[in-house]
Image 1 (cartoon, rainbow, N blue to C red):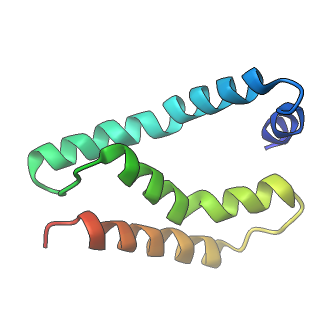
Image 2 (image 1 turned 180 degrees about the vertical axis):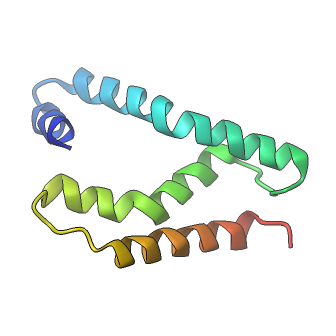
Length: 101
C-alpha cells in the first residue's frame, strides 16, 4: 500500500508511472481472474458475456472499498467480520448476475 500511495502521489509528475502501475497490477491480479471467469463461462458454470467487465465488477464489490480505505487511511483497523461480509456480499452479487441457476 505504501508503494501504491507513492505512485498515486507522483502520477501528475510522471503519468507514465501511473500507466505502468495500472497495466502491471491489472495483468497480475485481474488477468488470472479473467481467465478463470472465461473458463467458467465456456464450461457453462457461469454466463458471462464480458469477462473483463465481470472481473472489474467482482473486484470493485469485494475488495474495492477495503483497498481504498487502506490506501488513504492506512492506520484504520481491519474488522474481519465486516471484511468477510463485504466479500461475501460482492460474490453473492456477482453470482446473482452471472450464475446459472
